Amino acid sequence: MQQRFQNEDWKKKMNIRLDFNHMMEEFIQEQGLTEKDIQSLSNKIQQATTAMVEKRKNGQMDWRDLPYNQDEVVEEMIDYVEEVKDEIDAFVVLGIGGSALGPIAVQQAINHPYYNELPKEKRKGYPRLYVVDNIDPERLPALFDILDFEKTLFNVITKSGSTSETMSQFMIIKQILEEKLGNGKTKRHIVCTTDREKGNLIKIAKEEGYQTFIIPEGVGGRFSELTPVGLLPAAMCGIDIKEMLAGAAWMDQRCNQEEIFQNPGHMYGLLQYIAMEKGKNISVMMPYADSLKYIADWYAQLWAESLGKKYDVDGKEVYVGQTPVKALGVTDQHSQVQLYAEGPFDKVIVFIGVDQYRNTVDIPKSYEDIPSLGFLGGTTQNQLIQTEQMATEYALMKAKKMNMTITLPEVNEFTIGQLLYFFEVATGFAGELMNINAFDQPGVEEGKNATYAMFGRPGYEEKKAELDARPKKQEKYIV
Ligand code: PA5
Image (cartoon, protein in one colour):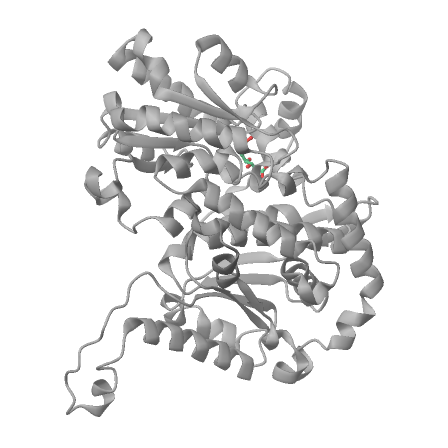
């Protein structure tokens, strides 16, 4: 049977759109860009476009090929889900950063907003999903209060195979499983997602015989949602991962266009780059859909960790990047939008809208004798949220604040696959324009190394000495 994502007409209908009118001078006058601004960068755009092609060819952007080269592992994951799903009631992801934000975002986007509260038959037999990323000591014991270990499968996800947060959680959980279920049964309750060779987890998994899925070598953490990192938790909750990958492939075709006005990913990267050059150091992401709220979290990591850099690729100090801010429409109209409208000209606000929500909610005709209330009657919540989005776009345009809108015809696996891939390409392209390495994160290392040193990890003695020599905090500065 042909699936909907194999139908060209349906795919065209599901095209996500980037509307950047409100970035332009015609709308926000001197705060905006002109087509000339874009043309004047044509050499830079060309260089960045060529670099995107070259780097993909040279294996420096392996995440770009994920929509095409995972047929086998996709089947393996689907088979695995079928094999285990009847035995389990909860699937718990242990991971952090790029190993957690994607699984959360996709689950919230696609599945019922109260998925975990639904009875199993309404979850079509799939388990509940929990993602434990932080190591707040109040969190795990609270989760244990609601888990039946006999019916729980833990997915340890770490690309490096060594992240302290994730590995400490694994150590805690393995011990509890052994205590509760005995050594022999523990194995069936752990599945690992990690690198083929690097790190501790793969060695442990081989030795102890855990089911394992591999994260392809050239794909970094925050670009790994479309690998088993994100695909296994999604499949485990009944999400169609083939359709997600088809959506990513569809966006890839669009992002291969040379002409920037035809290429949404490159255009988004370019617009944000020009905005940054004009001092817009804040990138606000404001979806008008609860289902997309956590896409803003995922984007925040992608954008911040990839583009926030001290050095460019030539080793020059540049101190670049845009601070991502997460907001939610309409909720944040009643909190942050005041600042966006009247505060400094330092932001680009990106709305994410939806044409067709999955439900329509009628607002009943009542209180017709109170005109200031009666006008709502006979309309729908759908109209209200969409109108409020348009009204906020208008208000920000009027206030000359740069804003643009990404619209999903519907929220489904195909459009979410497109959206994730779109932001990844945009990030890579912005990195090229900024002349920085978007795929490393040296700024995160210092804190990690200091933690290791304070914990007395072997090999970190020098760092420990450096830390011990740091200036002592003074009482007078503590109130
Ligand atoms: O993007 C990255 O590389 C990081 O944010 C990682 O995703 C995060 O640190 C977790 O790393 P790992 O998957 O190796 O445990």
